Length: 416
Image 1 (spheres, rainbow, N blue to C red):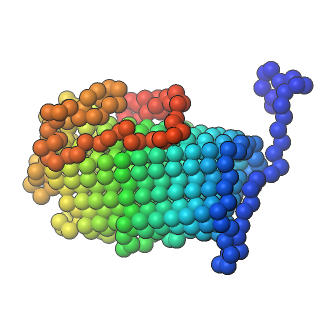
Image 2: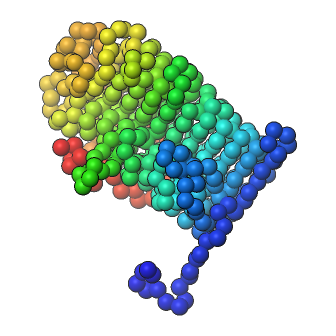
Image 3: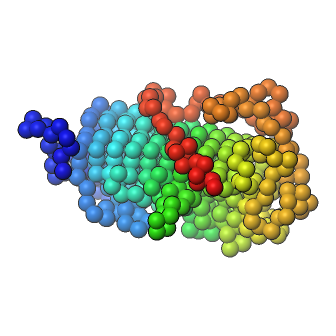
């Protein structure tokens, strides 16, 4: 029904077009090359049921569809009130999406399907998932999605992921993105998320320098709300990821989740104020080997939250945890979660965090989400390298939105 104020002079839009630009080369033969779309406003497009987003599908289409394209550019465009992803790149290589604003999308922002060497940078993606819920601000999917760079984007207010890698290939880089207010309508998820089905594949990919805040993970069981999400979520058997220099805060379940992968290195990150646990080391079906969790800062103020919850870590080859700075405000020592640990001392006695320090990291102003370290922070004695937040987010197309942090709208209720 029309909202109050509707008159004969009001604008009425009835979309009939799903793709506005349908650009496709001949698969396996002749690609579309070096086409540039710049400075366009694309708005009010149609949608359809399913659209590749049913179940766990991440989508399959976009307002701009580039199939088997090479060296093409979508830049400085505005996408608003669209039914599908703004841009879908399938196959091809070395394309670029830069400087665009994507707002109020029925699906997600940018979808890359089995395409390599692409760059998604300096975009402002917000209020996505207004139709389909299982999507992301930027998604890399498929084993041929290798060598892509997702950098300096501002992504906020989404129904599910900020950035997701679904069985993606190797040597992808996710860096200097600001991701906030994600997973507002979905559960068991992450602000930056990786899923991998292969139990032994090592991606050689990097997640660095990102700020991930207010991942909610909301759903319901009947009439009862429930929550589960992590800031950075290496799900299933995601392996071979370097996670470094990131800051996460106000997450539902934890700052970092290592599910069942191999040879992930999580170093020099700041994990703040997750409601349930600060980290989960699951060792899912005893598949994890060679995991590293070192030189990180774990800081939380929630009384009942724990430091770690774990699966079975019965052999040292599963994970090495050490030289972390740990502090629970108002507690003499950190509480441990499930995994059979009776206390933090018991955890240390079994070889974990033996050289870690329990002390206030001395943040500049944590009440205002300023997690810069004062010069006398004990983190520096553990080899922690300061994180330069000035690099995070868009460089040219800055986000000027008045973002209302979602975490305080749910907390402390969700933490009870």
